Structures are given as C-alpha cells and as structure tokens.
View (cartoon, rainbow, N blue to C red):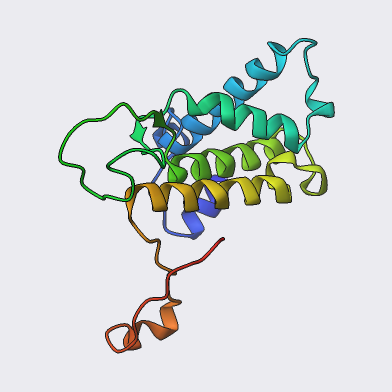
Length: 169
C-alpha cells in the first residue's frame, strides 16, 4: 500500500487516513441498523434473509410518521399552493427526496452486508412505483411540477427548449 502511494506521489501515511467514516457512510450504517431493528420488532420478527419488497414498503410507511415536510391533503384549502399563506392541520410526511436517498443507502448497505444484487428487496419494482407515487402526490399537493432533468450533452439547448413535466398518472 505504501509503495503504491509513493508511486502515485501521495504524501499521506497510513496514520493520516481519516478515522471517522464519511457522513454518507455514517447515515448508511444508521439506516441499516434502523431497518434491522424494524425487522426485529415485527411480530413475528422477520429475518433479513426473508425480507422482501413488502417489508420495505411497510418500513417506508412507518418512517413517514417522522417526516418534517407538510403535505397538503386534497380537501385542504392550500392544496396545490407552493407557498400557503397560513398554517393548516395537514400531516407532516417524509419528503420524496429523503425517501429516495434512504432507499439508495439501504440498497447499497444490503449488498455491502452480503446480499446479492438479484435478491435486493430495496431494488424491487414495487419500491420504484411507491417512490414515483409519493413524488407525484407531493408535487400535486404543493403545486410544484417536477422537471425532467436534461442530459449534460443537451445543456447548450437548455435556454431554447422548455423543460418537460414528468407525468406519472
């Protein structure tokens, strides 16, 4: 290892390596432990080897109660307003982006902890559908259309072409 570092011109010694994991790695470990604890608390407890997409969906619904994003219900007078003028009693939920990031971290943690890509419950189609529905619902509730991101090669035409709105209905 040291020979490779010297050959590449690195001046770092093994003692200079960061002792603390990155923020992403720490969050991934916390998320993995939280999911494992969730499975253990099920009645009956669910072994990780028997975990499937339905368990993941139940976990996401469970996590929703700890969200901090106001999501207006269809009957709310502020439904579809990006900046409501007053408070309302609509629930706080997990934001779509937070759920998407959570699934990404859990998907990676599953494989790092010995799970195979083919059996990864965090990569199931039902999870993608659920996330798409949450994204659509939250966009409508807040009146904020999500824009389709352009590829880097077409950024020069960005000012000429309007962004298309993604439709999931």
